[in-house]
Image (tube, rainbow, N blue to C red):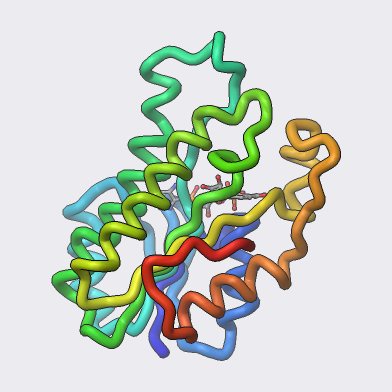
Length: 195
Ligand SMILES: NC(=O)c1ccc[n+]([C@@H]2O[C@H](COP(=O)([O-])OP(=O)(O)OC[C@H]3O[C@@H](n4cnc5c(N)ncnc54)[C@H](OP(=O)(O)O)[C@@H]3O)[C@@H](O)[C@H]2O)c1
């Protein structure tokens, strides 16, 4: 398959890339990857799809959100996750649905914080919940399959985020990669897959 992986250089992106390495993968990021692309910019996304030609799958492992206590949030910090993590990934789908064939698939990435919250997690939780709703609802209208991988904290990210997740069981790169693999090569749609 020809696959575009957005956010491939990141921690989750590396897990997805490792699991999908047997495919023809093009990597993308704002400052990293085979092609440079800000997924929140619909024009840039459209141009990237036009340049790449036929794709069998788009996998997104990208999307910033603010990790601060709720009391420290303001509308701007809360908006970060909605603009980057939600609308960035949604933009890949909104533009891509008109470009990719009916056999193709979209795989987005959310996280567990809307279902298993931790302090400082509301900025990510609001984005994760929105993505779950988008994928479930979008699947009944789309020609292509669409799923979202929702991992717990990654082992490789424990030095960065571990203090926020006391007692949580981190997931391995292989486990998260398997969820992306299942979403790309499997047959399900509208699903939230645990990482
Ligand atoms: N790491 C974890 O343990 C974990 C667990 C569950 C869920 N998640 C979620 O998974 C996603 C990725 O997390 P991560 O830890 O892998 O992050 P990361 O290491 O910071 O990597 C993020 C990647 O996405 C790219 N990116 C970010 N915004 C982009 C945009 N607007 N357009 C194009 N590329 C963009 C970045 O590249 P550039 O900077 O070059 O753009 C980078 O390659 C996040 O939404 C995170 O909340 C992470």
